[in-house]
Image (cartoon, rainbow, N blue to C red; front, side, top):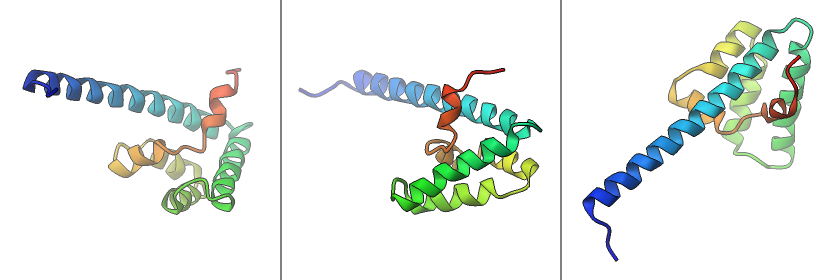
Length: 111
């Protein structure tokens, strides 16, 4: 059974909408990460925990080495540069947010 052109267009529209919603959720997570990283009391813990996640990805080969290297570089930047890199809308930033070391923040309660 072949789809009509209208059905194909609708499928593509739905796929773009789903991708956009996913990107929005990931951007929200990374905004939360930036807020945590900027917190004077908690920022270093969050950075360290994210780095530990990246090191685990590397040692257990859980993630593409390109993402491991990119996140390792970002997480070792000064805080302002780190936060800017995390939230960049450049294609690389969008791609990196798909493989995030900040998933642990989803399970933490806001103060």
